[in-house]
Image (cartoon, rainbow, N blue to C red; front, side):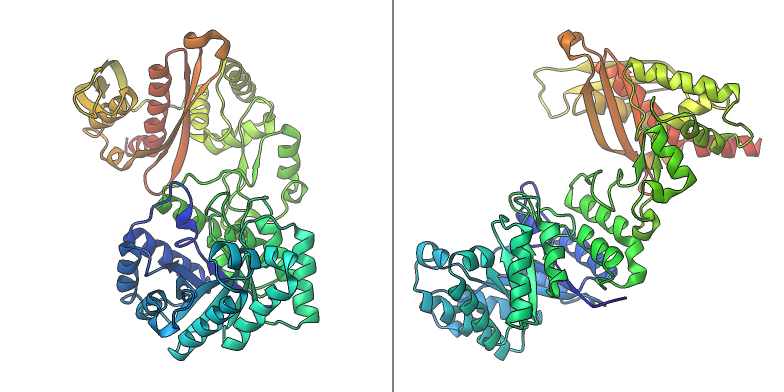
Length: 529
């Protein structure tokens, strides 16, 4: 592998500033451990001066041994007209117990004069004295030159003074921040190449925000121009439009440009780490995310699928296995017979593309999609459809009836109740459950009934629920499509239901979800017989 670049992850600090993100102390510890396993160099964990949660994190993290990553505390330079040794923020950073400190200072004269309202000379003193104080305490200091690119474009001389001041004070890394996220890639190239080639800065970092959707491109460009330290968040989330997405940057640098960002053997864990951090952060993973998204290597068009089956290079820029992802062939009315055949062969390897079964399944898929079904991504319902058409599907239960009652106004958060009656191998089971709405009540009642016969159902839970109105011109009598994503903690699958009745469409998707989970159980039972 080529030159080493240093990955600085700010998911726990900058990422936590995204709307809807709130980490517990345990969440932050889990993510930090996962990033350490991946092999990132720095983990910026928060500001011990900002809130009790971050203070608790730094207290707990002392008891954990990290093999690859340095835990970093974040704060600002000293306040104007206060001695560094008397500044509470700096002293809290020292007391955090970590050896690496990231502090930010203003590199744009506008911010110095109009926002923090001090003199340009005092701002330089704040930077130098803060860094010198932390270095004397034995800390490795990373200096974030906030608003550097805007400052450089408006007052180049002063922005450079900020960099030289931080360098002379002892900062290990000088990080150029595109804080407003408005700098174009050509500007990044011109400025970074000048700083490295002409001014011979050899310890530069880059910190890009994504307000123009340029954060990844700008970060990669900076590295190509000689910047060696890259900051971002692993999922790309952060304040406003987010930060540079490290999952994409790492893959681009390591696979495309032959830099060493993380240990080579860990690259195949990239997708799993991305999904893990999304799960802990309570964020739905972006299916379209480059390299690690569910759709990154998904193919739907028949000609595309045919070409990929012949040679993946035809429509895939890398082998998905390199980043721990996988190729997905999506079932749909435009997918072609080869796609359906590949799914059929998983169940009956003897069938071929000209078999009547393949033609019948193709016809059934087109009919259902005409009615409003969408099978791309709904792999659970697809396999069940194929099994039913081949005559090898054995239902796990028989529905006798279900009833849903909705109370409005409701005295509690449980506004609905459901009664489900099912039959399994001649044994009747009747259960009832409360729910936060009718679908939740049905889900709870169905699983409660099935757990009597299938213990594994207890591990299954819904991770996503989507409703799409198909025929909107019919107002409240419109047909709807419900897609449900389920998991048992190991595997994840999606199922679909379509009806004019949203409860019935939800029920259909719920039933497919549990039937898909129980396919293995029924196979085992058949083998035992």
